[in-house]
Image (cartoon, rainbow, N blue to C red; front, side):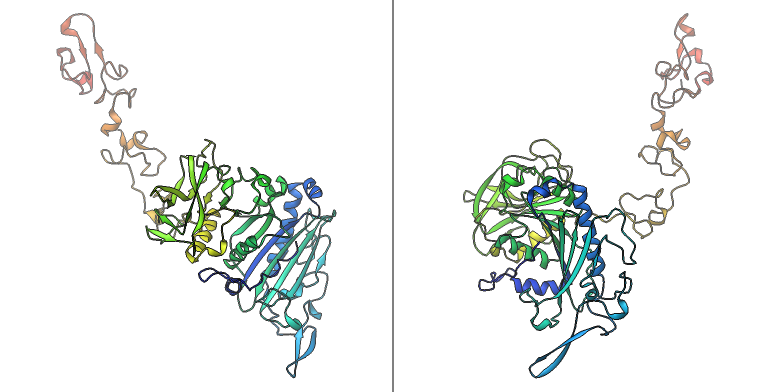
Length: 525
């Protein structure tokens, strides 16, 4: 894609939201950010490309990008490469020229020791850093370039002066000329970036996004997300491929819902939505209701998105904005985190989540997490979103990407977590008892002594009253309490015919003459 052009600063964002300059400062904090796109080179050609081919191209581009991003910002040897000279304010300055030094030249990248060394690198077919050809990549070419940036304009640095920011560009191109381009910002003085949210951002046009779409993207980048743009009218195959390479999807109000259609209805990654015409497709509700507000009423602060917020009215806009809420038939499983109060004092859910596996309003299952944000009309001003609104937006995307899940249980960490017990993790939960205890542990549904037998199936529970109910031990040859000649004739003897004096039924609770000393009934008259 063509690189995102710098926004003009004559209309700065309002006081409580991030300006682009502030976003760039935040970029310095996170250390490295990623923008990606699919360059279709003609919609008809892209429509014929297989999803597996698109996925391979993205993987090839991402792997080289991650290799570059893990390298130091500058050469650890403090020079040794080519330089060029220029005079500034009477001083003669020597600046390095991007590219490998003389001792790093060769057919592979094994000696590269900083990100500048990759400038001008190209390989066809793609290879690993030792020069070995990557399997299955025949017909592909990978190139890389490094460019010094002015951190205040995103434009080229004057005279090539290093101001602490570099633009890394990696392009993977197949034999038909279809390419995938990744761009990352790398800043000086910071460690390479760690794990972050890989966000698929659905826009109107990949190469020429709207100004409001760029404003949102500047927030995503400032939060450290890796952003991949995809056009709402792109082929379904491109969306399918992108699902496997991203953690969450974001839908803004500007895209054409008619062009997007139902492409995201059945995706299993999370979706954060602000588009009112996608609310029904994503499973929230049949219709929506509009109002104008500056705040929402937080009603649940136990969820990841609203953690630490007070249960009260929360102002999220600097000025009243159009808000859409759920209305009509709604999902039976929707979880409201905040409501919008209308002029008639009626509360409508406006910040809503659906967990994966929930039931949509149509009755069909929801395959992945969904979150509906409390804004989304054509007249919504994204620059009115204050710091609380921005925090809500950021955490909504993080939750859609999987944040807020309980950490997996780790045996040996000293905590008996959910899913662990004395049988599976005695190090955390303690040693199990040596045997089941009749009258105490024979009816809890657990294999307490970890011998593979639970409750009445365990021999230690044979005398527990729970295990002596009718039929529970029938057939063991003993007329036990709870059994009688009718419920368990195999164990409890009887004589029900003939003279009355000779009749008896073991276990019926009546000591009869014919039972004698009781031995015939095993002591259970």
